[in-house]
Length: 406
Image (cartoon, rainbow, N blue to C red; front, side):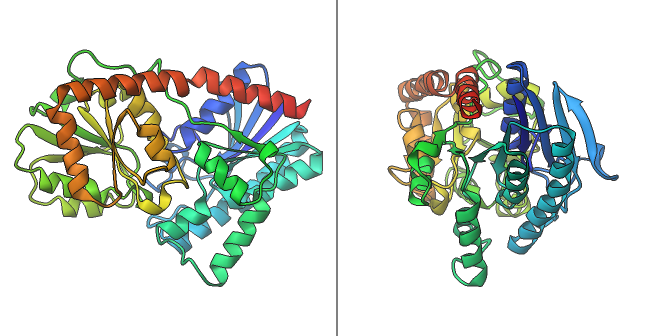
């Protein structure tokens, strides 16, 4: 097949959607297909264009067999609601021109659009319509509802109504996939026919991320001498509700056997640093190289996965997959019955969103009960192998893709 993919994020971005779009494209190439990706220049999660890609116009490369067309995009240093809209509109405009160029160069059999950015589905739909290609939309999160939940957009008014109408139009495709059963159910609520919906999960790197038997090298690198580490690693933004990690550090500051580590970047990091002033039990570090991911995640005695209440079924955090693969238990914030709560069940403890006391108690419980810690950690690794295998997930996806085109 000749496959044309449109998605704002792509490697070398290390977190979020980018690694999964890149992994999908590279797998399809290894399966014998021709793959082109139209994306923005890498900027996430720092909200600053990677210096290696700064300046100039469109950048075209071939990486791991994938033809990559990176278009200039407005990247706001402070991504509030209005600036995010401009950011996505900027990418959509650049993508429209790039997609027209790509379909003139080679006619695709299928066009795959990745949301976010949903607004770029205009370019994806136009490319499919002009060439007669099949159209597949893959939803990593419901960005319109997430914007309401996080306060980036008001839940009512002209802009809110326009956003909802646009979403209804944008999710019309030959196939619509998303990453959890609960998100598939939400597509049905939004009017997508069940026979067009595909569950296409993000995957764990179960061969790269393995349970560590000895101490992580990061302990020596970062001077961590306390026995236990509660680790958050990933983007630091609105959906995470990561303030609860600092609140838990305050509640547990009398425990001299525990260190909190926040490893990541994003627009809310400066605020967290300010909130943690005076604490000696929390450390902040930048995102680490991918090749050391197993060492980083293996440093955790317990993983921390906070999320605000309104985002529970709008996005399933991609960072969860490798947390499970590391064989360490997870403390997550989610409401019962939500997608995140179901995925963590048996692999850690789920507490109510925003309840710092319960969050801190769950951390304490997993640290003070070695048998519980070992059992839930082992269950996490087993679940990653069974449900989050990269090869199995991408093989199933490729088969459905081939059937759609044939």
